[in-house]
Length: 147
Image: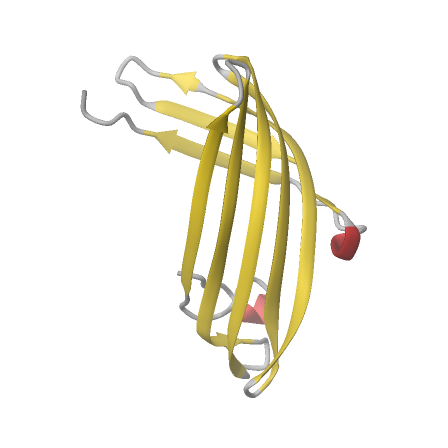
C-alpha cells in the first residue's frame, strides 16, 4: 500500500498496490548481493491541490554487502525508479530517480533469537537525481522462526 501526505510532498496521497520480486545471491562467505524489481499502481493518487489521477511507477535496485563481521556489514546499493506525479485532474507527468547509497549496518543478537539491526546509508543522487543528498536511518527487528 502506497500512502503519504500529498500536501507535504510525501507520498501519493492514496492507497495503491506494490509488487516486488527480490532475489539474493551469496557470492562467497564474505559477499552477498540483493536484487529487487517491482511496480506500483495508485489508482487515486493526489497532488497538494487535491487533483487526482492514476499513477504507475517501476523500480529496480541492487546491492553488494560485505560481511565484514558477523554483526557488522558494509553496503553499497543502487536504486533506479521511473515514477509519475499528478499535475492536474487526471493528468500526470513521469520522472526518473537514480541513487547510489553507501552504508553500514550492525546487529545486536539476543539469546531469544531476536536480532535488532540498526543501519545508516547516504543516498547520493546520480544522473536525473544529481545533486540530491540524503541520510537514511533504519531499524529492523528480526524475529526467529520456530525451531
